[in-house]
Image (cartoon, rainbow, N blue to C red; front, side, top):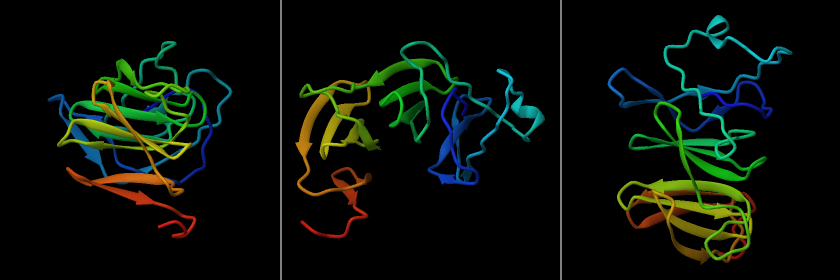
Length: 178
């Protein structure tokens, strides 16, 4: 998956992402490494640097613009792409890289998040859970419609879905408050 902007470290492992096959189904790639390319040219031909079987170029328009890709998740035939640093949004693309919509928005409203720390998807419920910087779990359906907001009373860093009704919370600051 390619996008414009941002910086990164070399050889960093990231969550699974996807590449399209000829049948428009997603093939999940289990071990992804991030590569920083320092070029002064606006156009870099990745195929001349890497052996790439499939590449998804994400559409670039004012609504889809991303600075840094922090996390990518596959949900059916959708790619959910998080930029928690620059644009502070969760963008949804189809498997060909066309931007479809953004889930939620950054702000102070009851259906908005205040920066994104992490997100997770629940395929059984067709929902997206966003953990914001104010320790709220904001729930949207996969089409981006707001469902609920739940405050979390402890400081956590990331979330995961373990089942239809089970959410895992992770904190690297110890168990104080649990």
